Amino acid sequence: MNILIVGSGAREHAIARALQKSPKQKTLYCLATNANPGLQELCSDLQIIDINDNAIISQFARDKEVSLAIIGPENPLANGLTDILMGSNIKVVGPTKEHSKIESSKSFARNLLVEYKIPACPKYKIFNSMKGVQAFLDQLGDNFVIKYDGLAGGKGVKVSGDHLDSHKEALQYCEQLIRKGGPFLVEEKLVGEEFSLMSFSDGNNLKHMPAIQDHKRALEGDMGPNTGGMGTYSDADHSLPFLTKKEIKEAQKINNLTAAALKDKYGYGYKGVLYGGFIATSHGIKLIEYNARFGDPEAMNVLSLLDTDFIDICLALTDGTLKNIDVNFLNMASVCKYAVPKGYPDNPIKDEEINIEKINNTKGLFYASVNSNNDKIMLAGSRAVAVVALADTLSTAEAEAEKEISCIKGPLFHRKDIGKKFIIQQRVQHMRKLR
Ligand code: AMP
Ligand code: GLY
Figure 1 (cartoon, rainbow, N blue to C red):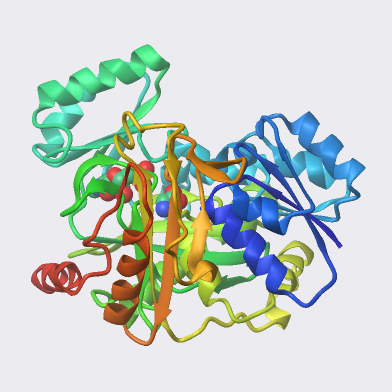
Figure 2 (cartoon, rainbow, N blue to C red; figure 1 turned 90 degrees about the vertical axis):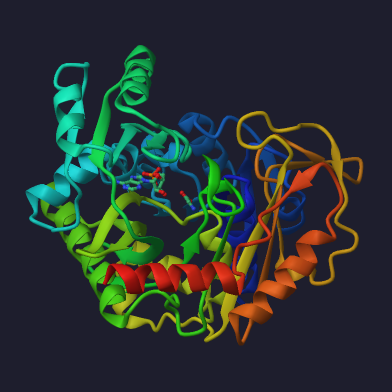
């Protein structure tokens, strides 16, 4: 079987590893934005192209007689790559352009939940101009969030108290978004603890993955600008220490209802990974955003824990036979930490060498935005490499991940606090206070 992976970050490296583990005969191909050495090693051919060019991708897929494609990042999904490849009879893990609106348009996602009476939305309003913004901010008071409506790599959101200190600053940001071409959302700021719950969806049935907590802020103590995600963890029971079983069930139910809503709206089912970005609040589980793909870094956690043949899962997703297979994950805790270039996310250092020779467990190392160049690994301008450790307890996994990431040399930084007991305990206390 010839399998195409679109994308070349650590998520796609994790996807390639999971495919490689399958005993099935296969040849892997990758269409990439950078010369990722991990993907180069696993794939028969890796070509650097514009991954937003559907014509180049479909030509490559036909030339290589690809029968299964897995689309990693959001932009090709939003561009309708799935629809194009499906038109060439290729099985695709990743939703159609219509279904991808659940991620590519934050207003679509909010409106869908309201239309189908899925009670997980904060108060929100969608704007194309400044008309009515001040009045809605007055209604929300000090707790507001401003969001660009389209894809912004996790960086289009500004939150009161963290990034915006007054209505004046909020209005200035709205004006900036209008100049960029708007539209935008103003939302009530939700207070609680965030987590990711990703589900495999075959169009009719969902199978849920372990809950993961990501850390979106660049700096320790959840300070600094929003990023693509600095690191993640999950507990051995597939939950998180600050969540109850009921809360996990609530999030799973919201994913089930959303997949059913998408099927009802478009007349066919959502196929791929449905990723709910949730927040546990004093009023139950609410939705922060939906993504139409594996999370990055969440993919490194769940695919390292996956104990079922990933090719079987991909085929079940595309064939609509997910209910016939068991999807199992190891009962182990996982911690993933990203090393990112100094200056990330605003002014990341580029084209400097990093060195990973001291890494002990290369199976837990995932290459991201780096280029392999004459046996050197050079920074390519975004999150550089991730390490994942699995263990019976979170504290052992954290210690292992921290040891590994600390021995990577170069102009990098990482968040030492991710997965540490004190920060997890803070989350537990926070939720106790809220409940
Ligand atoms: P998003 O790109 O929508 O995931 O937003 C990025 C980050 O902004 C989230 O991970 C949250 O930390 C924060 N955020 C977004 N929407 C809200 C909200 N309504 N209330 C509180 N925080 C939010
Ligand atoms: N971990 C955040 C994302 O993949 O969007």
